Image (cartoon, rainbow, N blue to C red; front, top):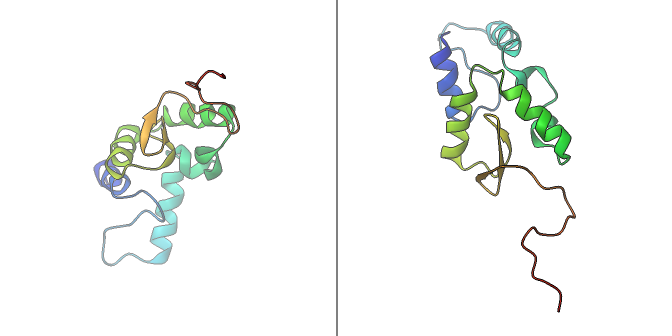
Length: 117
């Protein structure tokens, strides 16, 4: 399977097993392919919760792992097209369907909070 086919898969949602496009493929072929892909794609070989973490340090770790991924650009493009509601996609943080520079922790006051009267 070519890298462009993998890229198309990421752009179409990127979740679940990676499809092997050969109609004669078996479940073993899918599992073997998933294992091979996991060696090259950080989100397949690390804890998936890392890409949806609440703590800033974990989010930054996921972003750093994404920078090593050969599918980073396609992953980011697919996430933008789908307006992913949250998580790290293609090395960027999504909150509310848009890319943000950094993720703010839960329970913190808003950055532009109105001054107290």
